Length: 144
Image (cartoon, rainbow, N blue to C red; front, side, top):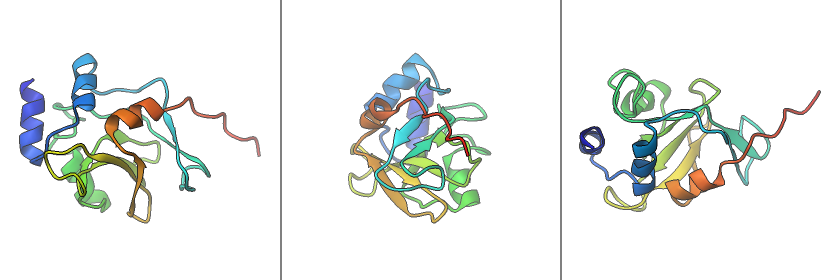
């Protein structure tokens, strides 16, 4: 689609085909499964992260939006400049999920990293496809 091509040109990267395919079905939104297991503790939980939405392209909330898109979030929240912010999280900016192009280059298949408050990207999936496939239903909050 034109919106996807425009987003790719604006970032200078090729978006993962699995992401593009998902956008073809639904341009962003809230998945049923919103947690992803992690082998490390996060500010969110000892063993997983949560997301509110997978971001689409175009419009006010798209990855390429001037005011709320990936570039703005990298600048405003100090995320590492490794790729593209693809998820909205419940923390409202204190952490995020990004496509990471450092190893694969702009034409390759990016890994998916979690960026916590320390702003150090930690890989959670080898590809966007693995990320989507690895999303689980969130465990119920522990009663304190």
